[in-house]
Image 1 (cartoon, rainbow, N blue to C red):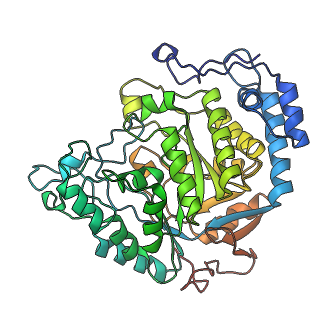
Image 2: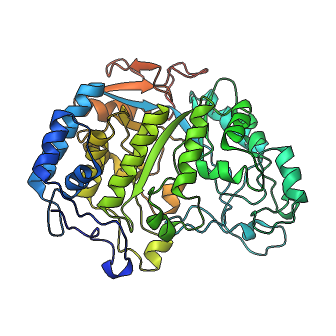
Length: 450
């Protein structure tokens, strides 16, 4: 029976969670099921994530058995290809007052008001500025724009939504007129239309942003995502998931939507024909039971929708975050936890083909190691990355195609340029230089970065 109550970086006396990693399963049984390709239970996942130990720490030999099983599963599902995409991050604003304990990306929205004195160091882009950023990147060959932003109080879905918010007398809607701010972010639909340059793929509007885009109305998530799709939205990032267990969310992001609301929004996005991704952000106050329950909820969601193109484990970067500054955590996940999270994601999510290794979170060397633990996607060029960097991460840099081909070939795998939805793929010959994108509307193989 597994009794590793909390991850070693979490002061145990701080939390009294209902869910702890105790199971009635045995590690050997869980590993046998994983090797045989049987559908795993939450207890199975807990055993694999903890390596079945009844004391703190990971059993190294058992860990390697889990990684080996996951790597074999990866080879059987997707083969030897390692995919990546030519993309740009265009985050519109850092203004946010949600107060998540794990985040240092946002800046308090009051600091953005015209009557505020002092420099806050953040930014807000107008729709015209967003369009210029995307148009420039498109000329360089990118074909995906990822946009995830703070919940600026002046944001509204569209003009109709703004009118409703302006007339409302409710004080709980987190709304303030754009006139109160130095920079007007426009509406969500205006920003999406601005970023929809040529045939670029627009990946935006998390469930949390969709909630912000319907606050104060009786509109359904399907109505909201339908209007966003009409404005140019192509797919939805499954971020803002963090851990889909409310007792954890109440600690790390109490002002965010709860688990049920997140799942409802994702189902609605799928219902209007939008592809989605899914994530987990782990290694803070959570334990292995929470991670296993999260995986079960993602798998159930995929059973219902079939819309999830990839799953992205995101290791918590603790530096410069309120959780760390306030002594709620002593650090992030260990390297062993990271490897097991990738591996168990591959073994548990039998209905999601692609597992991503985030070099922004892990760095190059460990990111490559994750490709031997069950992952098969290696993110993208991300010509800008601000969220992890502002939390103290050291790996949020641009990545060239040349570097991708070099790294992937070095571990004996096949580098493959892909579209956001994985429906287009192009194998890259390492000897056929120069290496640059070819799938985008203006991509001609010219290297993205000098």
